[in-house]
Length: 291
Image 1 (cartoon, rainbow, N blue to C red):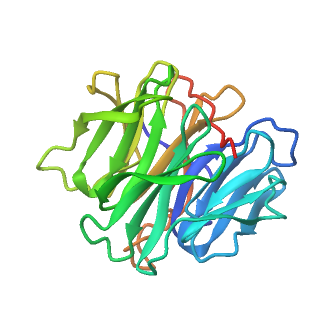
Image 2: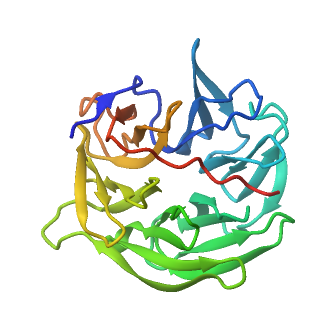
């Protein structure tokens, strides 16, 4: 299967796509994503791309809040807004105090907790971690010795969480429940030794429990069934595929973000665009932050 170009290359490092819920806001039912190292949230509005600065050099990802508005992961912490357009964004929690470390990808658990990844700017092995933030703002580290913390998403019944530390070249699956939280990690799938790709990046899950994973440096999204077996590949014309999410009115379109990272100016002119595929399955709405 081949993905088609959906947007112009409007970002340098596009990441974290999601379909915004029907929350009554002016961005309801729209595709949103971040230009991570330019500190912006992008919204695919009918009149054109809307850009919102997050007041930080980094916009790692965003999620809707259950009570309305949004939460954004910035360079070292979280900011929240009551307005989903981010007009009233304000600090919520400071998570990192080391200038050599920044926040990266993350996502929400079924009970409204937020899982946020961190990494060193130099991507030194073991220099990052995975942090859980409860709706009241309480933060705790749930995994250490992470290098480049990336996608996290839950199975349809909420009992499993899939997680990527990209340089590990594999996706881990955890058991999850509200009492024990993430536990019992094991390998879900791994790239072959001869594969030149860097590793698994952002991911999402469909209604059948299949896991769709952006393969950074591999020009593709892979779909693995709940047993970890590869069942579909979505090909892209650019190398750096960063993340994917289902959206559209029926959640039947797979939106895929890409990056210009480590590319020369005259290489891969489509890099930085959002692509889209119609894989014949439906995805799940994004979990919302309870804070």
